[in-house]
Length: 486
Ligand SMILES: [Fe+2]
Ligand SMILES: [Fe+2]
Ligand SMILES: [Fe+2]
Image 1: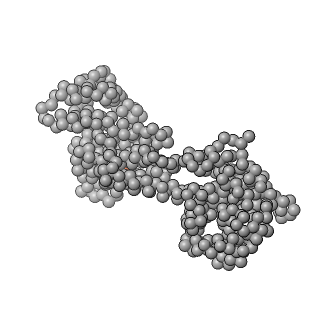
Image 2: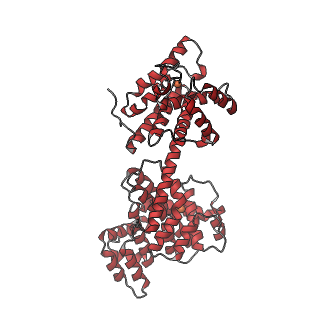
């Protein structure tokens, strides 16, 4: 009985599943013969780009052709590898049978039904002399005629005895009308001339262009006010006002916080954690505030309030969000420790800058996850797009939240390496913290094996590798102890 699989390329999930199944199958083909696998991948990418670029197929049809290209030779699974096949009757029989064998195997998956005719007929010749059915002209499905052409091109230009492009093009022209559909040959040559061959991976390009479009749409909606970014909870504003007043008491602060019981409980949990050691007996907000100090209380409250931004409904996004949260928190503590070790002003302010430096990423990912047809796109692709756009969105948000100009500057400058000794120390501290988290593997970048004191911001701050390594060790402990408490 055929496996229950999606029936068409109509839902994103179905598409994703089919792509994965196709990859597994072509992987099996490659186990037996790496050359057949590489051939299949080239044919798939080139056929889909050509069909789409030349306007032969539209909508989901190029993607279907991509899958057909990937799978067109799976009837050879079980044949001796192409590399060692010896010509003879047996090989001839296998060769003539492989399109039908492929269809038999693939028809076990309902989802592949729309590609079967392209696979079955990819060796039919335009003049009717091909196999397996001897179909001719337009009785051969268009997709199969495209595959025949691209398959021929690849056989001419890759592997042993490969021709120079010019000679291969001449050969294609000769085959137009006999093996190949003559009306496809010239458009294909034009496509090759326009650089089509370098188009690369069809699926990756599709993904990337989808993401680019989505993100520019999101940015537009933000700037036109159609999309309203999340607000900072009211309690944070109230708390800031209370702290700004010189004569505020612990009770004033506690009154504000206790209006929000969830927040109060989390504040107590953080204050009791080993990170704020010695405060183990803290059982109330009233007791926590004097021990933490007003500013540190505010830092923790902002961090708790921020944490809610990092919640995601979709499991795939949840993994990214959790990573972003750990990165933000690690960066906040690292920036604070750097400030403290250099006796810079206002380490709590620097903590908040570290906490919010990448807030644009979170907002973008949230907006992306909420798109009506948010497809399953690889996390790498999403992250690259987010990386490019996160500063401008972050600045917009932080202004809306009423954080000072310094916060905007940190967000704009934290990725830049054109720093000088005159750059504000808070910016240098966050820049450095961001890079330290990268070294520690608490970011989306590959950990870098750079000497910490050699980082531009570390040099300007005049801080040694020894101190920085201690800070890293401390940040690791902190993240382990408190990241889940917020
Ligand atoms: Fe074939
Ligand atoms: Fe960043
Ligand atoms: Fe960052």
